Length: 147
Image (cartoon, rainbow, N blue to C red; front, side):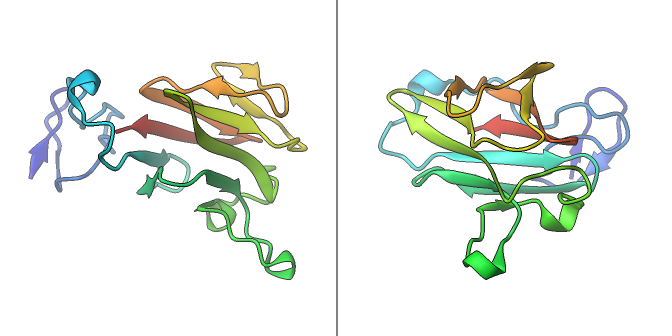
């Protein structure tokens, strides 16, 4: 078990945020410069509205949106089951990909927008991702943590 430094609540290893107070439970002291660039990279995500969290491989671009069975499209981060349709998530809402030496988020002309720090992203423009960022896809909040 791991313990929250802020409120003392205990959780299973791998939990990213304290469900009691919201404090980050991951090790924020990692040295990115010491990582071998040939190693696999991942992002962790947390959807506060549904408490779902997971990990996605960055070896290929990550599509974010809702499943579209008619078009045979399944995004790597499928927000359908988290209330994506009701919260304004487009089917092909956004994309995370490597851009030279950094990871970027690109809005894909979503109807209800993609937001970082209260700023709506311009469609098709890459925005660098910081190590921990709160992103809003339509009205759905997703916390993204780079590993």
